[in-house]
Amino acid sequence: MPALAPVLLTLACFAGAAVTFAVQGPGHWTLESTLRQLDQEARTFRSLTADMERTKVTVVVNDKSTETGKIFVRRDDKMRIEFNPPDEKTVLRSGNEISLYNPKIKQVEEYDLGKHRAVADQFLLLGFGTSGTDLQRGYLITLIGEEEMDKRPVVKLELTPKSDEARKQVSKIHIWIDESTWLPAQQQLFETGSGDYLLIRYTNVVRNPKLSDNEFKQHWPKGVTHVKPQG
Image 1 (spheres, rainbow, N blue to C red):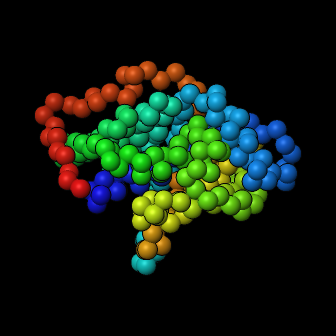
Image 2: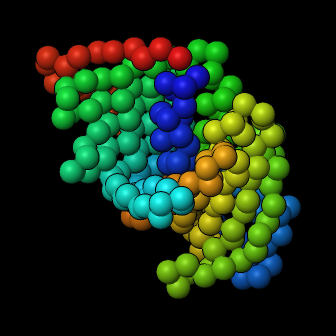
């Protein structure tokens, strides 16, 4: 799925851990208690908005490029990502349908996950509201430990995809979960083979805002070109 893979990676890099609230003191989190907490609070997750910053690092030439934007997520397989200038674009997911709109060239790339739905969901198991039980189905999980990020204690997990097909795209994922709110603070996705990675930071996270269906409709301007890449 060469044409679809970059889009799945884009969606994957804006995934997050389930929203929950810490009930244990610092230094007491184990892998088992972390997964139980994710199970518990996944039940009440409905939607989320957040500002985000994504940095792509190409290791071999030590090149870094950063994008910023905003993400909107609803539990019923709906997601919208709005990237800020100078590289404006919109990624929209609704069920099996994914659209990538580039306003500079007035073009919308349209994808149907179809037979690749299982791989997409493998990545999107990292989505907001995912339970610890679902994470265990898709990943081998290691608790790396507890750290401090922006003067906040965080739990760091390492996830290794169980699926051979998923590992062709991503070899492993690191997630830092804020212990005070149990929202995703940062993620790092390592691409298979190259060692290149995506580093994503989340700020101004709002849990369970009201997001209407209109937020996830294709409001493209008139005159755009629609293409369906092969692969």
